[in-house]
Image 1 (cartoon, rainbow, N blue to C red):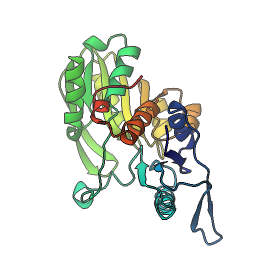
Image 2: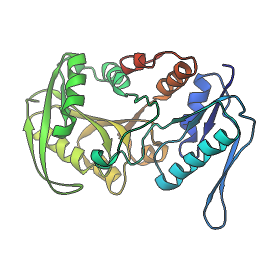
Image 3: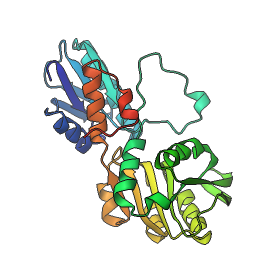
Image 4: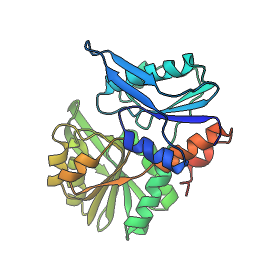
Length: 285
């Protein structure tokens, strides 16, 4: 594609390479380093004058450093006369904060969804999917779960949880029936995994034959990996918005859905002025 450049921040270079490969391109040359006082330095190694620039940087790892690196890269491209600069952020940093504090964007934003890729994975990997139950581990995810259940034409359930404090659940109540069925837990992200592991135990005790977890963003901090290894999951499935290679070495239950084709197609459509809404319900080939 003419007049387009894709650069990668340092948070998730593997995903950036996959995106560029799907577009038949090479990543742009960029050098990121730190001065002795730990300030981030970015050097764009090629001309971006008049180009449509896309910078891929996920909100993972050293989140604050990576966010600052992204901002510096955007600024470097703008002052180098790029015609347009678009940030491609697979996992949006600080999205867990209270919604009322986030404000609103005053620039165009496309919010992409993993749901089409999740539906495709379920149909291809769970033989009993036509009689499964989709389960939300909390009431807040009910809309997400009902959408998936409706598109699969299966039942859904949710788990009502009462928290004593953050990352600590007091008790859980299952609303719905999973008896003699495969239960598929669906959530937007998993951090310490206490909630989904408790939820899995609750589903097995309620009569589920198997339990899967499908999570958009697998943060897996603290005791998460040991909890998953000791839990009753058939598989814990995440997208590759966050690097998972090291986690998979110590946790064979983790499986990954590649979403590079969704991001690549979003870049292509944005560059060509086409609608991105097609990706809300379809996985590009």
